[in-house]
Image 1: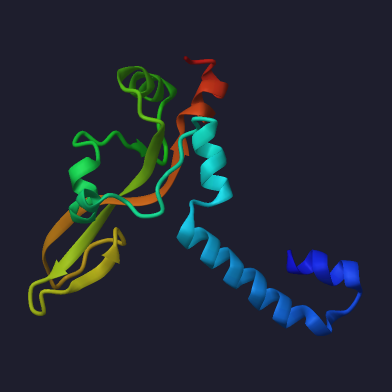
Image 2: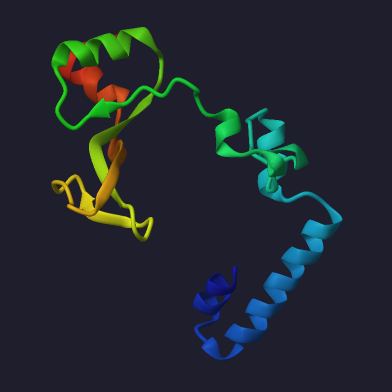
Length: 148
């Protein structure tokens, strides 16, 4: 609104006072009544997320809502395996992972040898796992394989 007033008058001298008055008027109007955006959305019965999540969600962790049986794709994957994974679940996105090996040093308890870079002479044991390198969406595969 302030920009419109400045453009209409051609005088930027009143820019700061107009800006302050516009912001103050908006704050006062929003404190008295709901905003025009929220009113329009509710009249049209359109779903709108609240500004703050419900209190219950403050106590949730990602482990509480994520899938327990995570379906991952490897960096190199056969087309048949991808089709099987797409048909066995309805996930929209798939994490892409690589296998990594971490060598644990017996003396310091820390890592040595890096991630999958061969073995170290001071290592007692290896920890094997997966490292996330990206993600891919189902619609990419549906386009490629003409899969529904």
